[in-house]
Length: 364
Length: 253
Image: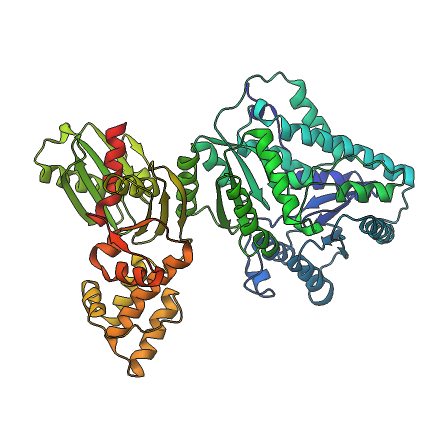
């Protein structure tokens, strides 16, 4: 039996319904970083919205410039089309200008039925940034108090943080040991992306069951690293497998860039802040390009990856600003790279498939 | 004997070679919508030209946009690998291959050992490809085969502001209405193709052009040479270079 057959991955809608039936609330959360533990301390389940793909974008397009990425375009379309009606609130972290713009549209022009909470991340990882972020989390606490009608204690928040830390530790182990688990890339990403909507306790159960089972052997294939925002369309992952390669590590905003370390502070707000700010380098927290380059290089060294696929969402400006320097830096180190740009709603084009195959022919 | 079949977006090419990599037969036809039939027919015609029985073909490699639609091929390779491999046979040194096909344009860099060290390919846009030239010829109601001759006779190169296929066609019609010379405009259209290539990547080492566009429009190599400031050569049988490279891979199976 392989690991992918052993794991039943619950659907997002089922998880949301079950959580609400037990008296909880659901928050639709836009990318990328947010305090999952704080929401769950209020018995609010965060349900992340990375697009989603395959929605009719005409509703959102009527309110957005043509150069806004498909993650934001699809999200607005999904909201306006009633796809997020199950949510009791919508949270919009200020990851980039387009997401901030989405927050403004929802607050000022197209207010949905739910309250909308913008959320600000500090740029840079300084101590002042941590202080600012802890304050922002306290402000968020007050907004959640108004919505949920409860005031969780510091002890409750700390307990929620500890659950998240256990879940994140298991998530990191899954990333690290992926080659031993016999998951094909497509199934592996379906599994780890349950972190986008499962309560920590449920994710822990699934992850633990995988480690408890006895899976032997090491996967074969050309080892590569995937960098970008989100592995959509997920057809990419099947294409990678078909061409005899496998993803051995990732620098994806929705996956590898959210391997948060455990915190140290006894203050729950500072602890949440230090966890999120202590994650892998990411442009939306103002990480220097050199830090991202060093991070990629460390991953390559640790995994013997033979190349990097930059799988970017079209019009994701912050990601595309960094891209030339990252490719140049890796090229200087002798690491081959290829850049594929996609719209998350479109299937992978034949040109993109050819470029990926040609890349594997080159690094094989 | 070995065969390579390049099922492109516009044309399908087949090449038959012997163990010395000498071309014995080659054939080109429109790909149409039944790619498998086109591949079969092009191979049959190339085999007939080679004057050998079909069962003398020991191995076949398919390449191009429709490479997965050739069920009788023994293997597939991307056209990027095949154009590189074919050119390296004729130019065994560090080369940059510029391939302009019906739907794709590519820049392929090989080192002195023939190993590919990088490549660039256009995205989902017809600018700088054969489809761009076909559309311009259609809009101007000029046989596509006449474009090269018109451009060769031009005294000037019109500066085409946009290389989006749709907007360029509109721009050209505006220029004709304002009295510009057609030959100069056509030369400007070819120059926009060369400009698109120069913008894709740097051209280093010996630069070799392949593909159907340059096979019928040598003006592109001339204009690319002017744009890049280096000599640009056209490969032997440029339109069938992908199929030829595929045939070499077949011989190496």
